[in-house]
Amino acid sequence: QVQLVESGGGLVQAGGSLRLSCTASGRTVSNYAMGWFRRAPGKEREFVAGVNWSGGSTYVADSVKGRFTISRDNAKNTVYLQMNSLKSEDAAVYYCASARAPYYSSSSSWYDYWGQGTQVTVSS
Image 1 (cartoon, helix red, strand yellow):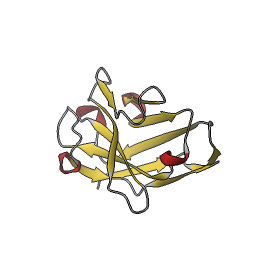
Image 2 (image 1 turned 60 degrees about the vertical axis):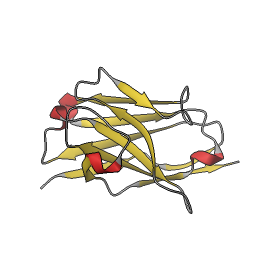
Image 3 (image 1 turned 90 degrees about the vertical axis):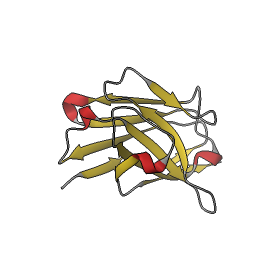
Image 4 (image 1 turned 180 degrees about the horizontal axis):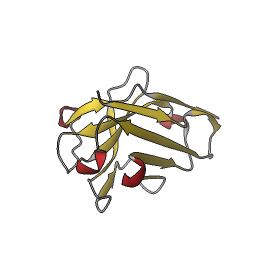
C-alpha cells in the first residue's frame, strides 16, 4: 500500500520560512514525478510546484515563484517544498502527490496517490 506522509507545516510569521517534507512508502517514487498542491478555505485546490522523476526539471506556480523551491531526494524517497518569505495568502493545507508518470502536470488527475495534508498558517 502506497502512503505519502507530509510533515513540516505549522504556524509562522509573515516573512518567515518553512520546509515541508513528503516521504513515500510502498512505492519507489524515483520512477514518478511529484507535486505539491494547496487548498485554502473557500478556494480551489491549487498546483504549487512539481518535480520530474530525477529532479532535473521543476516548476513553481507564478504565485510562489522566487519564494518556493521544490526538490527531491530519491535515496530517501522524499520530496521537499522550501517556502520562504511566506505571506498570509500562502496559508492553506498543503498536499503532496505522486504522479502516474515521470513528468509532472498541474492537473490533479495526473496524480494517483496523495498525502493527508499539512496545515500552514501564516500570521501577520
